[in-house]
Length: 117
Image: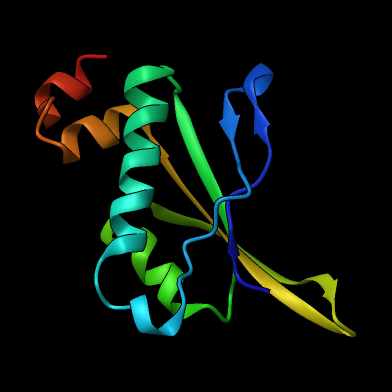
């Protein structure tokens, strides 16, 4: 199943894309997926001015879930057996982060400034 960002939806200001935070075994553990996703988030928030970014990942993909959490993306939902995949029911997690949360995490806005919005 794997972790997935999919489809860009500018009308609703949500973002999903076919970018997957997965790498071949010999490249894992080097921070490449974290760096790539952080750069995608930076682009979406800083360059495109998105308000909220969300991602959908296989609930069994613990590494992807941990990666999103390390980047400050919170888990918002756990869809239990919501998708039929390769002959079996699979579960998914939804992760999301707001622009102001991303800016605070990057040190570009403080919690006090954030609460003033």
